[in-house]
Length: 123
Image 1 (tube, helix red, strand yellow):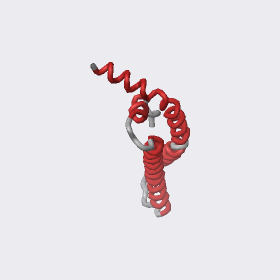
Image 2 (tube, rainbow, N blue to C red; image 1 turned 45 degrees about the vertical axis):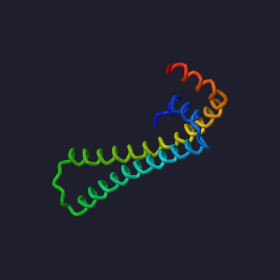
Image 3 (cartoon, rainbow, N blue to C red; image 1 turned 120 degrees about the vertical axis):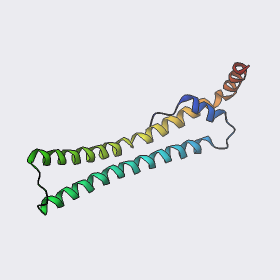
Image 4 (cartoon, rainbow, N blue to C red; image 1 turned 90 degrees about the horizontal axis):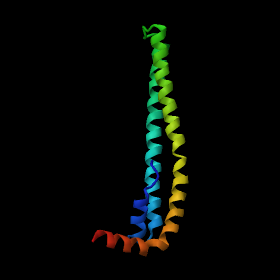
Protein backbone atom coordinates (compact mmCIF):
# COMPACT_ATOMS: atom_id res chain seq x y z
CA UNK A 1 0.00 0.00 0.00
CA UNK A 2 1.23 3.42 -0.77
CA UNK A 3 1.48 5.63 2.25
CA UNK A 4 -1.68 7.54 3.01
CA UNK A 5 -1.80 10.71 0.94
CA UNK A 6 -1.45 14.00 2.79
CA UNK A 7 -4.57 15.34 1.06
CA UNK A 8 -6.60 12.41 2.40
CA UNK A 9 -5.24 12.98 5.87
CA UNK A 10 -6.08 16.70 5.66
CA UNK A 11 -9.59 15.83 4.49
CA UNK A 12 -9.98 13.48 7.43
CA UNK A 13 -8.65 16.07 9.88
CA UNK A 14 -10.99 18.79 8.64
CA UNK A 15 -14.03 16.52 8.33
CA UNK A 16 -16.41 16.65 11.21
CA UNK A 17 -15.98 13.07 12.31
CA UNK A 18 -16.16 11.95 15.88
CA UNK A 19 -13.00 9.85 15.84
CA UNK A 20 -10.67 10.16 12.82
CA UNK A 21 -8.14 7.84 14.47
CA UNK A 22 -10.69 5.04 14.40
CA UNK A 23 -11.33 5.63 10.71
CA UNK A 24 -7.60 5.38 9.99
CA UNK A 25 -7.44 2.22 12.08
CA UNK A 26 -10.30 0.67 10.10
CA UNK A 27 -8.58 1.51 6.81
CA UNK A 28 -5.28 -0.04 7.87
CA UNK A 29 -7.04 -3.05 9.38
CA UNK A 30 -8.82 -3.66 6.08
CA UNK A 31 -5.56 -3.27 4.17
CA UNK A 32 -3.73 -5.67 6.51
CA UNK A 33 -6.44 -8.32 6.20
CA UNK A 34 -6.45 -7.96 2.42
CA UNK A 35 -2.65 -8.36 2.29
CA UNK A 36 -2.68 -11.43 4.51
CA UNK A 37 -5.49 -12.99 2.48
CA UNK A 38 -3.62 -12.40 -0.78
CA UNK A 39 -0.48 -13.92 0.74
CA UNK A 40 -2.40 -16.98 1.88
CA UNK A 41 -3.91 -17.33 -1.59
CA UNK A 42 -0.51 -17.28 -3.30
CA UNK A 43 1.06 -19.62 -0.74
CA UNK A 44 -1.89 -22.01 -1.01
CA UNK A 45 -1.64 -22.00 -4.79
CA UNK A 46 2.07 -22.75 -4.62
CA UNK A 47 1.52 -25.55 -2.12
CA UNK A 48 -1.22 -27.05 -4.30
CA UNK A 49 1.02 -26.95 -7.36
CA UNK A 50 3.83 -28.57 -5.39
CA UNK A 51 1.56 -31.29 -4.04
CA UNK A 52 0.18 -32.04 -7.49
CA UNK A 53 3.65 -32.18 -9.01
CA UNK A 54 4.99 -34.44 -6.26
CA UNK A 55 2.01 -36.79 -6.50
CA UNK A 56 2.42 -37.05 -10.26
CA UNK A 57 6.13 -37.82 -9.77
CA UNK A 58 5.42 -40.50 -7.17
CA UNK A 59 2.87 -42.21 -9.40
CA UNK A 60 5.21 -42.06 -12.41
CA UNK A 61 2.49 -40.40 -14.49
CA UNK A 62 4.81 -37.73 -15.83
CA UNK A 63 6.69 -38.10 -19.05
CA UNK A 64 8.80 -35.00 -18.70
CA UNK A 65 12.36 -34.43 -19.66
CA UNK A 66 14.60 -33.08 -16.89
CA UNK A 67 14.53 -29.47 -18.08
CA UNK A 68 10.71 -29.47 -18.05
CA UNK A 69 10.71 -30.88 -14.55
CA UNK A 70 13.21 -28.23 -13.44
CA UNK A 71 11.01 -25.55 -15.01
CA UNK A 72 7.93 -26.86 -13.18
CA UNK A 73 9.72 -26.89 -9.82
CA UNK A 74 11.12 -23.43 -10.53
CA UNK A 75 7.60 -22.14 -11.15
CA UNK A 76 6.45 -23.61 -7.86
CA UNK A 77 9.44 -22.10 -6.05
CA UNK A 78 8.79 -18.65 -7.55
CA UNK A 79 5.12 -18.84 -6.57
CA UNK A 80 5.98 -19.79 -2.98
CA UNK A 81 8.67 -17.09 -2.72
CA UNK A 82 6.23 -14.47 -3.97
CA UNK A 83 3.71 -15.54 -1.32
CA UNK A 84 6.36 -15.22 1.40
CA UNK A 85 7.38 -11.82 0.01
CA UNK A 86 3.79 -10.55 0.10
CA UNK A 87 3.38 -11.84 3.64
CA UNK A 88 6.61 -10.13 4.69
CA UNK A 89 5.44 -6.83 3.16
CA UNK A 90 2.38 -6.75 5.40
CA UNK A 91 4.72 -5.99 8.32
CA UNK A 92 5.12 -2.45 6.98
CA UNK A 93 1.44 -1.69 7.49
CA UNK A 94 1.86 -1.22 11.24
CA UNK A 95 4.60 1.38 10.74
CA UNK A 96 2.47 3.22 8.18
CA UNK A 97 -0.46 3.19 10.59
CA UNK A 98 1.59 4.72 13.41
CA UNK A 99 3.06 7.34 11.06
CA UNK A 100 -0.43 8.30 9.90
CA UNK A 101 -1.66 8.70 13.47
CA UNK A 102 1.34 10.87 14.37
CA UNK A 103 0.84 13.02 11.28
CA UNK A 104 -2.88 13.36 12.01
CA UNK A 105 -2.10 14.51 15.53
CA UNK A 106 0.30 17.11 14.14
CA UNK A 107 -2.22 18.31 11.55
CA UNK A 108 -5.17 18.68 13.93
CA UNK A 109 -4.14 22.15 15.19
CA UNK A 110 -3.94 23.36 11.57
CA UNK A 111 -7.51 22.42 10.61
CA UNK A 112 -8.84 25.99 10.89
CA UNK A 113 -6.06 27.25 8.63
CA UNK A 114 -6.70 24.49 6.09
CA UNK A 115 -10.43 25.22 6.05
CA UNK A 116 -9.76 28.94 5.56
CA UNK A 117 -7.24 28.24 2.80
CA UNK A 118 -9.65 25.94 0.99
CA UNK A 119 -12.51 28.44 1.24
CA UNK A 120 -10.42 31.31 -0.20
CA UNK A 121 -9.02 29.09 -2.92
CA UNK A 122 -12.43 27.87 -4.08
CA UNK A 123 -13.65 31.45 -4.76
